[in-house]
Structures are given as structure tokens and as C-alpha cells.
Length: 73
Image 1: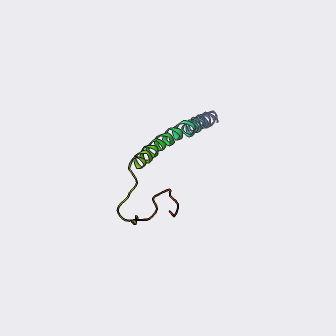
Image 2: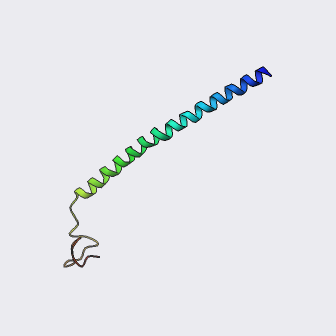
Image 3: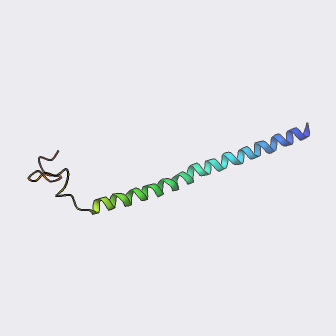
């Protein structure tokens, strides 16, 4: 009986530590991953905004409105 209670106690302690570690990961680990992903997206957006708008090529017709002007869909 004593051995069974001791084993059950150790099992519950181990389970508690696992739950505690999962809580720490949920609070801090996922925040770090999200910050890293947000940083990559920010860099991609800055890079795409750094290139000038297209004036020739597919999707632009001569004489049509430029992006942001009246008549642009």
C-alpha cells in the first residue's frame, strides 16, 4: 500500500511539472515564435514597399490611371 501511494505521488508530481512547463511554454515560447514570424513579415513588407511601382509590363496599360489615382480599380 505504501509503495503504491509513493508511486502515485511521484506520478502526480511529474504530471504537475509537465503541466507547469507547458504553461511556461504557452506564455513565453509562443510569444517568441510570434515575434520572430512578425519580424520576418515586417522585413518582407519593407522589401516589397522599397521597389518602385510598375510602369511597364503585364497588368499596366499605357494611358491608364496609376495606382492611387482616380479611375484605378
